[in-house]
Length: 571
Image 1 (cartoon, rainbow, N blue to C red):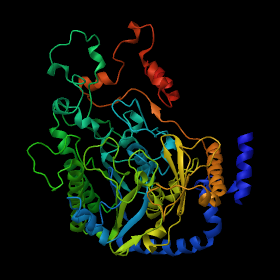
Image 2: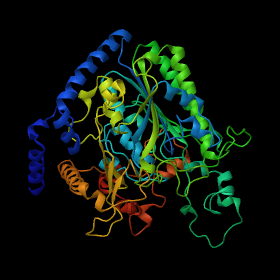
Image 3: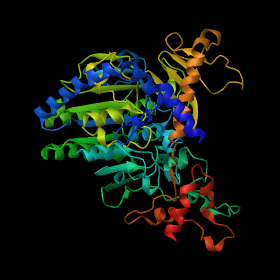
Image 4: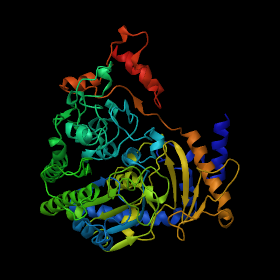
C-alpha cells in the first residue's frame, strides 16, 4: 500500500495521469517525463516530420531500413574517429575513421560499466539491473538472461524483419539465454567473454595457475583427491536457427577454431545480407566481434600494429571486419537503406587488463562508475540520410538504440508495456543532428548498486561517501571531465535536484521492480552435446550419493529463486 501511494504521489508530482500508463504506452524512467512535460509539443512536431521522412524512404526503397549494430570490447573515447590520437598509439583504423567522417561521431555515448551489463542493456533497452544481468559471466555462470526479457530481435521480427546475431553475446549459459530463443532467426554466439580463450593447453602453459586445467600436463600430485573439481567441458560458441536446437560450434581441444570465429561471423553476416536483399526483406544484424584472444594473435600470424599490444591488434582486426561489412553493403546496393552503428561496449580494461589499455580524456575504466568506464566511442552512418561530417555532443545511452531501432523499423507497438524501458527514441538526433537529442540524464550502476547520476554537465557520486555527509561528491564535467576534483560547496546548488532524481528513480522501481535472471545448470538442451559438455550440464556427483543436494549452491547465487521449479520439472 505504501509503495502504491508513493508511486501515485510521484505521478501527481510529475503532472502525469496514472491512466497514461495503459497497455499502449511505453513506460520510461521517471526522469524522462520531466523532460517530456517541458518539450513534448516540440518533440511531437519533430516526430511528425520525421515519420513523414521515414515513410518516404520506405516508399522509395520498398522496406524500412536495414539495421546493423556492431559492438566490440573495452575502448576509451578517442581511440577511433580521431586519427591524430592514433598516431601516438601505434595503430590505425582507417575504415572506422572514414565511417566517422561520413556520418556522426558521438562524443557522449554512455553504456554500462562492463560487458554483460551493456550487452543486456543494448538488447533489451533496459538497464542491466532491471534484468538481473549485473555481473560479468564466466564459465560456468549457472545463469543467464531470463525468457521474460524481450530482445530487440523479437520486436523487429514482429515487424517483418529478418534477424541475426553473430559474435559475443555474453548473456549466460542457460537455455533462456540462447539467442535463437530470443527472436533471432539465426545465431552464432559465445555464452561468455574472451576468457575461455585461455582454457587451452597453450594457455595453461603460458598464463593459468599450474594444474588449474589439464593436470595431465604435470606429474601426478598424490595429494589431489578431488580431480573432478577442475572445470572441463567448455564451448567456443553455440549456433542455432529459430525453432531448432542449439549445438556446439568449433573444437575446443585447441584454440584454432577460436581464431576462426570472428571471420566465420563476418562470412555469415555477409551471406545473411545477400539472402535478405534477394528476398526483399529488411534485416537486423547484431555483430558483436570477439576482437581478440587473451593469448594474443594466433601463433605464426604477423602483427598488424607497431604497438604490438593485444588490444591494439584487436582494434585493427575489428576495423578489417567492419570494412568487409561496409564493402558488402556497397556491393549489394544497400548503403542508402541501411543504418550502421559502430561502438564499444564500455571503457578500457585499465584494471588488471592486458597491455595496451589506457585512459584518454576520462578517468577510470571497465567496472568503474567514472566517465572513463561508461563513455565510449560511437559512430552512426546512413548514407544520404544522416548528414556527413557531424560531431555530436548530445547525450545518448546504449539503451536508446532499442527504442530508436524499433521506431525506424515501424515496430514501436511491439515494445513491451509492462516494464520500464530505459531507452529513449533518438531518431531526431540521428536524422536532425547536434542539439536534437532527448536525453540529459544517465543513471550509472556498478553491479546492482546505483553508483552515480549524471544530469547535463553535472554529476553526483552516490558511492564512497561517509554516511550522513554529502562530501565532495559533485562534479562539473565541463571543467573536471576526469572527476578528480570533486567539490562540496560549489555543487550544493545541485544537491536537492540530484536527490529528487534519485528518489523519483527509486519510486518508479518500486512500481516496476527489477526482475531476476534465470539460474540453472549450463548447456542444457543442446543437439548432440560432446560428452564433456553433457557432463557440465548435470551435477558432477549423483545427488543420491550425498547427504545434501549438490545443486544447493545455485540457491546462493544471486537471483536463484526461479531454479527450483526447473529442477523439479526435470526430475
